[in-house]
Image (cartoon, rainbow, N blue to C red; front, side, top):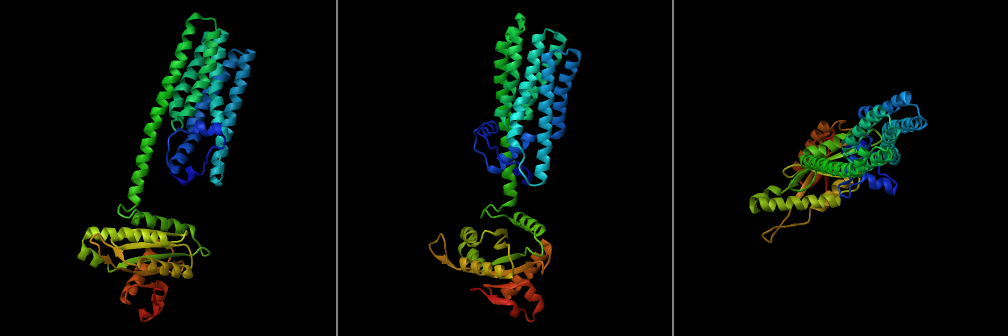
Amino acid sequence: MTEIAQLHGEPRWWLTRWLAGTGQSVPDDVRASLQAMLFGNLPIFLGGAASTTGIAVLVALFFPSPAILAWCAVEIAINLARLAVMAHAHLAIKRGRAPLIDLNILLAVAWGFSTGLGAGLSLISGNWAVAIVVCISAAGMVGGMCFRYVCAPRLASAVIGGALIPATAGALASGNPILLISAVQAPALLVAMTMAAFQLHRILLASMMAEREHRHRSRHDPLTGLPNRLGILGDAERSIAAAGPDRPLALLYLDLDGFKQVNDGHGHMAGDQVLTAVADRLRQALAANEAVGRIGGDEFVVLCGGDRAAAEQAAQRITAALAPPYPLPSGSHARIGVSIGIALLPEDGMDIDTLLGRADGALYAAKAGGKARHAFASDISRSEPADLALSAAE
């Protein structure tokens, strides 16, 4: 679920919230994507609007009764309003604003009612050629609602019901005995189409949840739950793209000291337990503008939204957080440390590969200086020997 989807916002009114909802608990990003679908695709919208409006204009030209002319005006007004709301939505999202989602929902219900009203009036008119054309158009709209609003089955049901009520009333008022069957046919159609809309929605929701789970797994480490290499470096690329000279960024490359001894001496199960504990401690130690990911083995990357001083403080917090002993399944405890290499944006590079390489070089220098230390890449490049760049962790 994209940032564009999340910009669509939530309906504000009780009725529109109910129409847009399904009664199911879904993650916020999935719900945002479903609500973004309410605005649909512009070509599909134009096709549906052109169909019902074109039929209304055609019928008004050949059968210009006062009622038909009034219906034609209503149909044109509703579709022009829907077009204006959609155009506003696309413009608002480009500017980072929320569209008129409540009005969009209510206009959809009004459109359904207008289409059904035309069918009802044409049946009352007794002009069966007109009635056939308008009713076919209305039937096409009713069927299309199951797909048009598959994201919101309650709304689909409301639009379908709004179309069937005036159409059925017109059939019953037409005086044609055979059309009395619509009193049974219309409710049955409403129930069937509503069931189909909810079934299609369940299929859509299952597909979206599966896609969400797949995306999460592809970007997260299954052991620690932290972002994996793809996830954290992708976050880093986006942060770098958003950063500038006035928005410094630090990349901290972490490598655990003494972790190999835990694996060799106590087994991989104990090692996994320590890694999970390390991930928990890192989460607790980081500030709101910092993010952490595991890029493999006992190596982690931390993104720090700040300057050199902020990176220094983050390194000290991390070193202190990981220093206390770790309980092992055997009842004993393990002690590990952490060496940290730090690269800064923009002085050490402006792309993730360069920053990662520079931080890796600083990490190597930190380990060479005695471990449990942190080093800045910029200091390593300026000083000889490298020991001058090392800072002992507090």
